[in-house]
Length: 424
Image 1 (cartoon, one colour):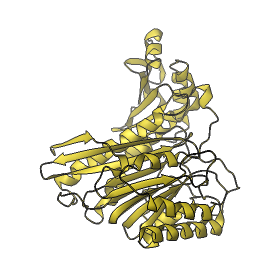
Image 2 (cartoon, one colour):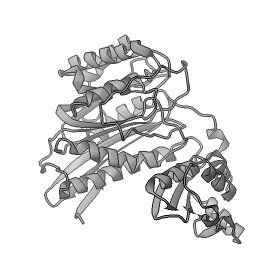
Image 3 (cartoon, rainbow, N blue to C red):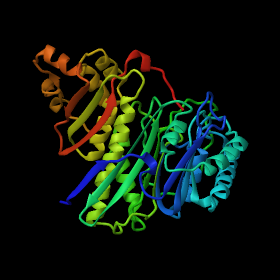
Image 4 (tube, rainbow, N blue to C red):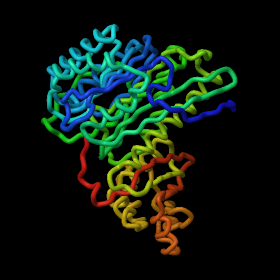
C-alpha cells in the first residue's frame, strides 16, 4: 500500500505549475460569452488522449489522435458552435488551419496543438473567426483563465465542472487540474483498444445535423512522467470514472479526454510501478470521478444519483455491460424520478444487455430491500423499497449469480423535463 494524501486546491486547469489559460467570445456560438478556450503549457509536455469510439469521429478528434502519435503536446484549443463533425475533407482542412494559426500565436509547432470541438453536427466551423479568436486567446493567457475555459466548453449547451487536487507522497507533491463538459444525453465510450494516434479508414460522414452530444475532459499536471506511462494512467482513470457515468447509451462524435504533463514540479519522475505513479493514479482517478459525478448531478431536472452495481457476473466485460444496460434504461430512470422502485425495468434491461444470464439465479435489491430473488418477485416491504427510491442517491444492486465479477455505473433519474434534450 502506498501512503499518500489528496487535497483539493483552487485554480482548475491552472492549479498545476506552468499552465495558463484564457477564453474569448469568437461569435462561434449563439449568445454572449466565451466560446473558444485555450490552455497552454510553458513548455512542451508529455501528453496522452482517449477519444470517442464513435465510427464517425469529428475532425478535431482525428487531428488530435494523429498528433498524439508523438506522445507530446503544448496546448489544447477547444471551440464551440460547431463540433466540426460530419464535415468531410473540408472539416479536416479547417482543423489543420486552426491548429497552425494557434501554434503561430503561442510559438510552437502545429503538431503540438490539440483540438476539441463541441456544438452543431454537419456544420463547418467558422474557421476565420476561430483563427482570429485564437490570436486573442493567446494574447490573454493567464493563471486565472481556467473558469473561462469551462464556460467556453458549454457555449453550445451542456454543463461543465472544474476541480484540482494536490497529491503528496513520501518523495514529493504534484498537482492535477481538470475541467470537463457534457451534454444531455451523454455516455462517453473511449477507444481503449486502438493506440493513441493510430488512424483507420475514415467512414463516410452521416447525414448533416444529426443530434450528437459531446463529452470533453481537459486535464493538466505538473508531474514528470516517464514516456509511455501517462497513456496508461489516463486510460485507466477515464475507464473508472467517465465511462462509469452515463445519461444515455451512445458516445458522441467529438468525445475526447486529454492530459498534459509538463514536468515543472519538484518531484521524482513517475515510473511504471513506482509509489509516485500509484499515488498519482489514485488522485487522477479521484479527480475524474469527482468531475464525472458532478456533471451527472448537473443534468437539467435530475434530482438524484442512481448507483447501479452488478455482481456475480461471468467476467468484468459482462458485469460492465449489464450495469451500463441497467443505468441506460429510460423506463427505470423515469420510474425512479417518480419514486417507484421498478424491478421489472431492471429485468427488461438485463434482457437486452447481451451478457451470460441464468434467470433462476438473478437477484435485485434497492438498498437493503431485496425485491427479486432467484429470478422471481421476492416478498418485501414495498414502503421500504419506495423509501429507497425516494432518496437523493438510489443504490441498486443486481446479482447475476454466475461468477465473481462486478462493476458499478452511475446515472441519474430521468424526470420528464430531461427527456428529449440534446446538447452540443
